[in-house]
Length: 434
Ligand code: ATP
Ligand code: MG
Image 1 (cartoon, protein in one colour):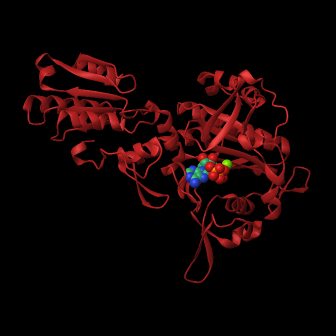
Image 2 (cartoon, rainbow, N blue to C red):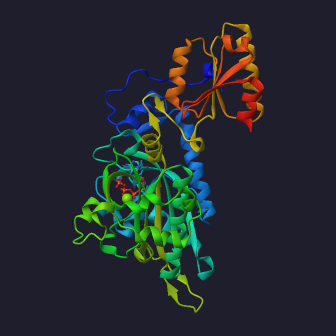
Image 3 (cartoon, rainbow, N blue to C red):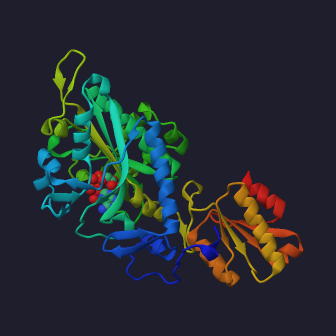
């Protein structure tokens, strides 16, 4: 992509209305713009990152055997009357009336809708177990939308729903999702702490939140330091024994921790840090299947209400969490896995025919090799171009200038460590395309 044709409105100054660094950087780097309180437009660069996060989330859901569908954002209130949640939900639900005076709502979540779809489509034990998911916008009219996309009103969520014949099946589905979450966050390069979450009056002890450690997190966590010793490779290879080990380690949100009379973790191993909740999994049994009349026939001919669970990931919130975890004083430092472009190609002198023809040639070669490249071909000062590249945080910068070209070299810079190297054009291309 040529920057001269792109839409990348970067800001030099730190916007005064943004309190945390990820929000500031998302605005400054031209990733998003707020269009109403807690509602954001995703600008081209931000949309690319969002799609990359979404893709990793999707790949891990598919790998776990979940099946993707797409449910609408607008829902009928009647669906929610069936579960009794239309009245129970409160002011976070955005209620809408259509021209025929029918009550509608912008979905804050999809338990009711997916239960109704499954009720219409599943008849017997042959149709179970199933895990269905979608990645769709949600709306919750948060009292205090803040921190940019971290707590928006409109936000993108992956939500999955499992249907099993019995509790043992539900436990297996829950574990499959748990593994998918560990792998998803590990692939994103994030350390996520699974925290045992309260389940409320519907009972069951299967609920966990996944928190990314960050000083700006909204939750206060207390956890066993041993959680930090689990390696990325172990998380990528996670199975039931990894879950048993992880969930055996103490981790609680402050409110729950304060109710624990005897904390089992010795003081020297008890860590307290803040966390950003990026995922939440929850086994709730027959709550919706029973209230909404979903039942299937067992092998023996009896009718049972399926055991269900739901599994959310805050896809758009993850972008904020990723920036909280990956930035320095110059800007964002994207991990390779989610970077919007892999290479930022900087033409230092667009008015110099030699430089421009060399840079154009490199750009063409990178494109042919399928390396996503943002080519800064604008007529701007070198200093401004460097500042923009550092701000938007692409993993590699390739700098083409007149002095280097005289010696037959270009400069390759790694954004994360800042290392710079002079290389021939061919060696630089070989490095970036290998
Ligand atoms: P929170 O406690 O942060 O309000 P929640 O418990 O209400 O979240 P869930 O219903 O568990 O949220 O939703 C699943 C996931 O969706 C959360 O783990 C979070 O990552 C994301 N999420 C929830 N609310 C928001 C929001 N307002 N903005 C962005 N992401 C959100
Ligand atoms: Mg939650």
